Image (cartoon, rainbow, N blue to C red):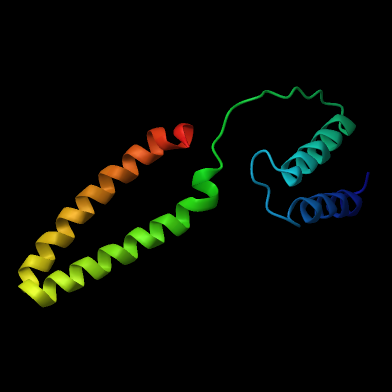
Length: 115
């Protein structure tokens, strides 16, 4: 097969895979997996599917939830700075940052399996 034909085939495959998002367990993900399997088997490889559990929650709702927490943090720190002074706002901001960093580390380790 010529280089141009390989490029065209690769371009078509990438375009087909990038048409829609593919959340785990969705019909789009199943279609993409079937397309990749067919392409790999066409190349002479054998494919075996391995089932695993995965939570869709972080991928679907993690960013909006993080944005809401960030907005609440900004509003709380601003309110504290206006009501009690800049030092109180800075202390509250630092405390909230530590809490958020600890929650983020815990989320990366365990929340993916829980939700």
